[in-house]
Image (cartoon, rainbow, N blue to C red; front, side, top):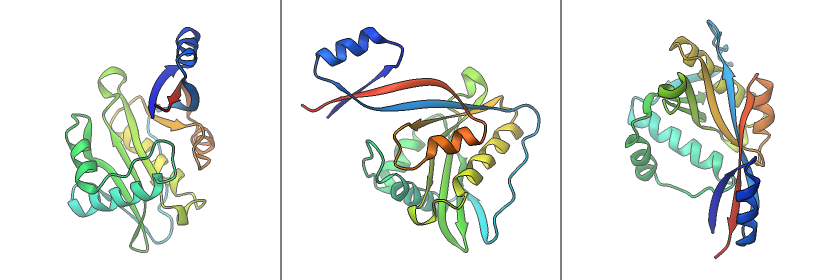
Length: 195
């Protein structure tokens, strides 16, 4: 499989891709939440604790939740812990203090990895990964994790928080993000060809 990303408005490149046998496969939407002043931290649900990625134990739990949470998503390729950790740790944008793992009654059930990818250009935080174990979806855990990231970014003095979402995600993630006040700022369509 060969995938290419094209800005939705670029009709010329879309026509070239189609002429070369590529077809639209999915769309990724960039969303932004703006922060003015203090953003309130959400209340912890009963039985929940949140732990940050400063220890290997928490990082391993975050990896496990991310792998299980993304297993049925477009383009997912499993990665063992060493590969996942190595890729992220080699990036100047990774700050392990921005990895949050939620445990419900001691069991890791959700994770969010924020990075500094948009810090230099726009003074914004970035949610690189957000995952909830399938058995725990529909309980507001994704909303809780996202609102926590907004509060953290506002506390750090950031003007907003960005994230990207697959518009055809197997979960209603786009609806969640829009419901917490995020707005679409960019759409990139993925075109795919089998070789």
